[in-house]
Image (tube, rainbow, N blue to C red; front, side, top):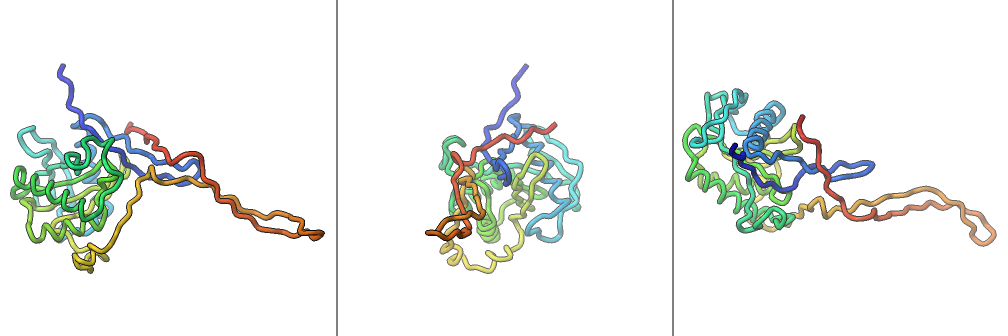
Length: 256
């Protein structure tokens, strides 16, 4: 029996704060079709809650997701404007920032990320674009996450040079059960970054720390009785003690 195709993936996921703070890496499925189905279904589910910077008219509600043949785009989905073709694309610029996920950078500047993502979108537009088609970007590597400033830069670039897709979306995956979607194209301006010029955005330096760069610390506070000469006094103390080692990734649970 032929082996099913697999898909390499990076490391990403939420940081759980509390007793035993951990970085919960999302256990994405290795099977390519399972991975694509997970992303597509998270995308559909996200429209039930909220979609950032969505243009009008909205294409929701989405329903009746169906996988297409290999020769076609990934899925067909019903929208408020009828059936649309949905193409998925992982943003993973490993050719220039790899060559593997293990050697990928922990962070990229939004301006550089936007340029790389724009190239990926236009490449998809040239080969899979057309009327009635949607493009959905996602990332499995924390360093390739498309932050709001990157999305705003992408939106501006695509207004100048529109892709051959009705809409371009990005889904940020939070777990195997939840993700949040942002409309990149045509989209709407960001509530803060949208008011800034390109030159002003260029002057902003953004640091997006990688979870492995976090340091766990323990804080101890209280009061102590001390002798000051012959006098007994009460003093407050505050101890900031680094935990042993950096924040380590732990695998979240797989879907049942």
